[in-house]
Structure formats: C-alpha cells, structure tokens
Image (cartoon, rainbow, N blue to C red; front, side, top):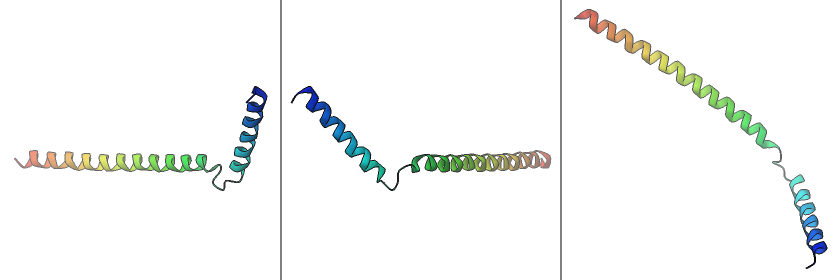
Length: 70
C-alpha cells in the first residue's frame, strides 16, 4: 500500500466516522449532563453542610444541658 493510498483510506474512514457521528441522536448531551451532575453535587454538599450544622448544634446543646444538670 502506497502512502497516497493510506492517506486516502484514512480520509475516507474519517469521513465515514464523521457522518456516523452526525447521525448519533445523543450527540452533544455530555455538556448538559455535566452541568446537571454539578448542580446535584452542589445540592448534596449544601444539604450535608446543613445536616452537619444541625447535628453539631444539637450536640452542643445536649452537652451544655448535661453539664448544667450536674
């Protein structure tokens, strides 16, 4: 196989793969999915912070009540 034949083969293969990719129905959904996942991660972190603050506050109150009752 000569170099020109190899180049023509590679160009034709690339054209075929590009045409196949254009027909793909899920094309371009990656950015949208990344944004949605990032939003869910931010919400999970916020909920975790709220829960941690509530538990820490309750633990402090319980600790103060135990110390006051002794």
